[in-house]
Length: 85
Figure 1 (tube, rainbow, N blue to C red):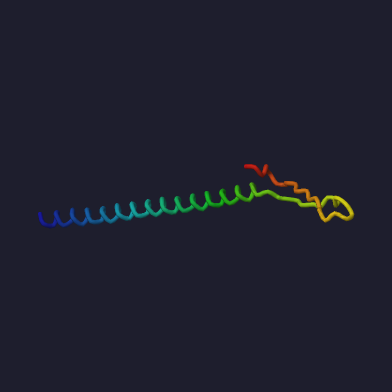
Figure 2: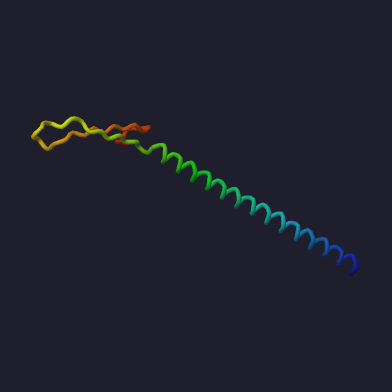
């Protein structure tokens, strides 16, 4: 009877170790997946910020007059969206 109890306890210990290993592996996979999702979201956010950045072209128009010290500048947005957003 004692031998049977020993065998049952050894089988129970092996089952507990295997259960712990499966749980640890699952938790590690979930943590890795969450880290990859965070990196992917960061990359998508950085790409979106780059796409929203305006590309400004500044050019000088003709001066107002020969004796005048004023100059007119034109600023044009060649970027993907309006500047008032």
